[in-house]
Image 1 (tube, helix red, strand yellow):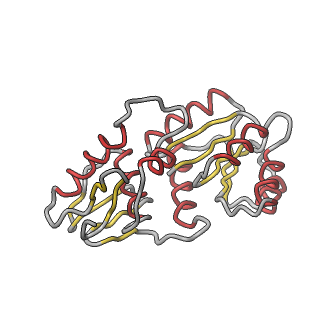
Image 2 (cartoon, rainbow, N blue to C red):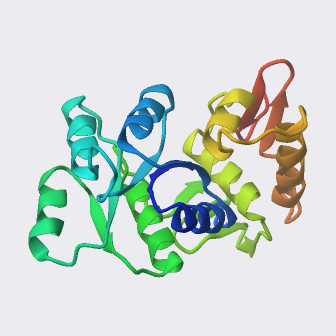
Length: 225
């Protein structure tokens, strides 16, 4: 679950980046419209969190350009402007939701998860594969009815695997969607986290579901290939 945050208030942007990262999102944060549009042209994000009051070109300009390009990327706008006309302008320009500052991080996270469920291709509110259920809004995953004690990163990985069940998932895909651009870590990062997720996923019993395809990536499936 990778998102782009365009917010020019540096302290607020850092609080949001850290808070949303703890919630399991991979967050790239930029401070102006031009940098935001550049990131959007290079990276396949799952959602965009956009401040309206940006320096230079404002948030509405960014939003209009995103929609002009035909993108259905879910967009949540942030605004300190309390007038109804400003909120209406954002929604009319193509935003999917908005929050008025100040707001609680928990509400922002919940609204982002709601947008991700809807997405450009709507997802069910609870994802199911085999005997695994995953509820993104409640941040709960279960196998055979038993709750899995997942970290935020493991939950994010399982969410991605379940959205791509029975399809090859490469390490690059996981890095692109579950880690932000600023990450610089060990080369076997993905394998370490997937290994931890696999052990927890298999803990309640039942056949293994998460398989490693040597030299290719990973597969969530009831039968290995």
